[in-house]
Figure 1 (cartoon, each protein chain N blue to C red):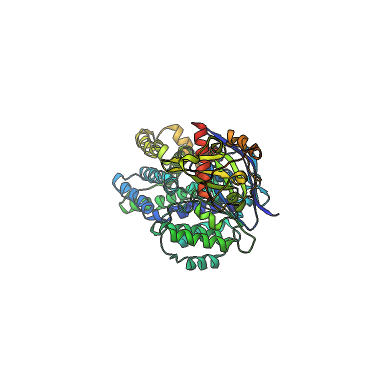
Figure 2 (tube, rainbow over the protein chains, first blue to last red; figure 1 turned 60 degrees about the vertical axis):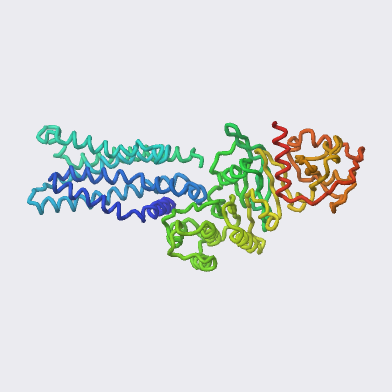
Length: 215
Length: 325
């Protein structure tokens, strides 16, 4: 765990010069929420924007030829992967929490009613879509790099557009949704378990790719 | 444990290039030059040592530890300086320390700042704002801050001005002074090694050509120069990588083959082939030397001079090129 934290810290230090960009990315969805007046839409937008930043550490490493540094450091390659996932997951949770609070506050300030179930569903939705963006992008970047794996950068945008397309088509009065919402713990548990499994598989694939990668 | 680095039978194949059976040993307290022309396999050898490439065969021991099974422990004891900065260019020197220090239990922050001061590096300056020589010094400062026992340098002097190169050699000499540290110094600028190296490992076309003491390597060859009429068929058989000009020729010759030459130069009659490997590289040349005692060469106008490492590499590379042609 200690090595994972060190690797996460190394990746964090790569992002340090880009914190202003990331903060800007977090503020933009608040504007979107105030215009669209939709909490789940705003959260989806936040997670999409943050999903795009997943490529940052890879891009910085590639630009600086830092694969040589990773090859020299006394740390197992799997810990480098664990560290990156840990940081990205942590950033996702942080952004989700910030967005939930900020977007809810903005909507309430504008006189909108935000129900608790709506906040809960938005949180679950946000975590789910972010997980989908991350678990597909990271192995792609490990395998092809940011330049070679450019198509993976479109995953968050595609995911966001799909969300926008599908959300209005959800029948909030459907018995299935009502049944699910009656048991929010089951819903949250199922999503968490699904996300954990997806992260596990994605991490396994990334470790395998990095172990076999030659610098 | 007297050897800092032991490489045995290291091999790796790529399409169009093969690194074959590379073996050498770097004792504690010495500098070894890893030489060879561009594309000869120096960087591949270093990457195999660092497990950045997967080896096809052989073993590598760093301070007695296997570079695969004890990779983490081995890498904690070594440092690498490449030809260009491999830290994030947006990092300041201080941020570089913050990012790396956690990985090394021996990291000494005070020492790092002392080294920055000694190398005149501003801790607040970003990597991209440092000159190439300063970037190299930053990598060295990091290496010395955790007291790396083995320092591997991959073409560190290419792109450096003569003053920076001289400074680097002075730093390296100080680094090994206590007899507890060693340096593997890959370069194709062999003049750097004339001054600094104790040992030479010479790789050409992916094959080990020589490994051993630098003096032994240099003493094993001489440069022969002569007029156009001196280059007889008999002499040609004993020369390596002949260059002909309208005014004459120059070539490399093994010192042991000088025994039968009447010369005007200052070459000594001694020399040994101990330490040479890959005799197949010499093709017909080695066979020609075997009967040297039975033949007597006479060339009154021949000049024999000591060879530099540069000349040895150039002439022996020419033999290989001619052999391929």
